[in-house]
Length: 223
Image (cartoon, rainbow, N blue to C red; front, side, top):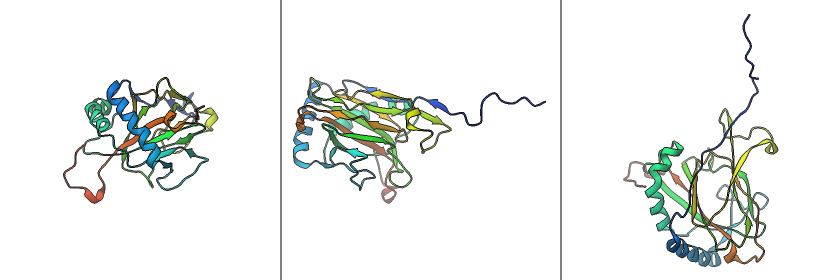
């Protein structure tokens, strides 16, 4: 007689998603200067954050964003650690282009579970990074980055009910950065900021390293 497998055909395997986290990333002086720049930018140019790069959906995402925020010192530091991050996450980011924005979460803000890539909106994203900034002591509670464990076989849809998913939370610690693959399901947990002052927000530079735009493919590119 053929022996039946003891594992059910509908079994779901859950594997923790690899996240690279680096603390004290830029150092006190550089991080402090970048925070002051972020606070100034938030007061001048921030707008309600969008999903799919074109929709404001406050039931899914509530925060504010600055699309033209400049952080060259952060990009230079990312470039220094990129080889180790690539090795850890099993991804190649050679000849990629950075795209990023400044995001701030204040009292009651959040971002529901989502992925950073899809065939329709962001097929070029190869690596997600999130760099955190805030005043010290931390003037808000919550705002953790929740990264959900992967279900096997790997896919871009949601398996099972959200209440059955497992995860790990990562604190939005000042001058820390996390890297993970854009296919990972993740969310920003609700923020409580008693002062409601914009300068007391949870600041984050959210970005991606993206494969070159096909319109410019063949031209000289760099990290």
